Length: 249
Image 1: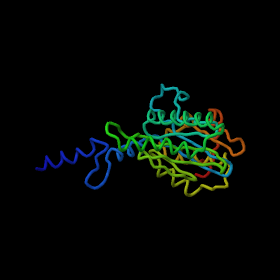
Image 2: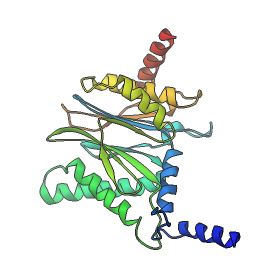
Image 3: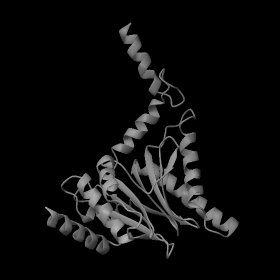
Image 4: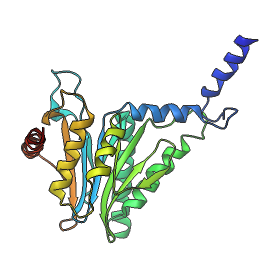
């Protein structure tokens, strides 16, 4: 009888449409765990704009760091990064890029960031209730600038989304958010936000963390254009943050 009971409990995670007796969708929870095992990423909003900083997590020294893409340009005024299964993220990002271009052609105006987020999350939600599918094993951080200023959203494998002033996803989520809670300010500059994101990642990720593992992108309220930082700029910011931390020791 014991074996039969265990076998029946195992069956609740074999179909996405099947709820467990305590009201859980186990495959969705597995997807969330996948995100928590993914590389860390940080999003920060300030009065000057919004910033994304992420860890490329280079596992092989023979890999070319510049070839790893973790920051994506959705539209001129929207950018995104992800944690979890990056191949899943690429599908969602390409859908968002298509949605942005369709809106621009149809209405001759840039799409609102929230519309992009809602469209992506609608697809993610469908994959939590349709037989033969599996949930997307990824969470996205999406930044954009609209008429109401800079915005930052975090999506969840369930299809739910939240708007934040600053947040983190991935393996170092808790340690990063601890730094953000202590040092974040809405009045900080874009440069200070980038440095704060780098500092938070340095404290949350392992000792081998270096500038080659960083990917950064930002949007300013002045230009309203998403920019992916060059390696030289990232190296300079990382060096400044490291020197500042060494002085405090």
